[in-house]
Image (tube, rainbow, N blue to C red; front, side, top):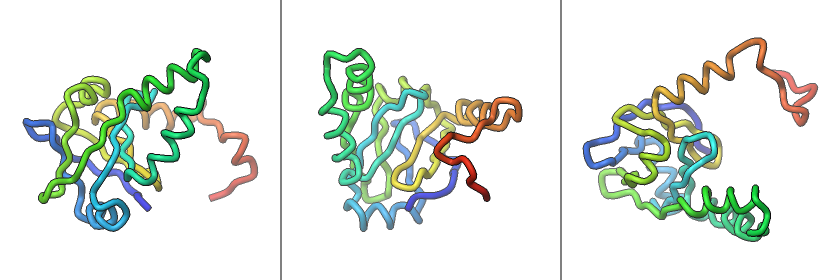
Amino acid sequence: MFRGATSLNLDAKGRLTLPAKHREAMALECAGNLVLTAHPHRCLLLYPQPAWEPIQAKISALSSFDKQSSGLQRLLVGFAEDVALDSAGRLLVSPELRDFAVLSKEVMLVGQGSHFELWSKDAWRAQLDLVMQADSFEMPKELEGFSL
């Protein structure tokens, strides 16, 4: 279970050091074999490889003749890259994915339970601002009646 938001830095080569608490979980869950891909919100998704495989299978099974489906296939599967943690717990974010998510030095790694989102720090702040606008926040229908 991946939780929490962590501010990190990409090094000059585009490498990101995964926090130690998550490195251990990744080593157990997938031996450090991960999949990094694009998300429509201009962030990146980082999955343990075994968790990504059923998602890719489901997306790939969609009709390539449907505009929305083929767009998602191009984005999620087309950008998907196998990445591995090195001995220092770092992973390389390719120039293509850095460009897609407009990542520079400062990034945010945000746990989403089964995976992480990777955001530029500026885009993450903008995303939070959108969520926190009182007049635009609505609970999804699936959570009607839900209480914290």
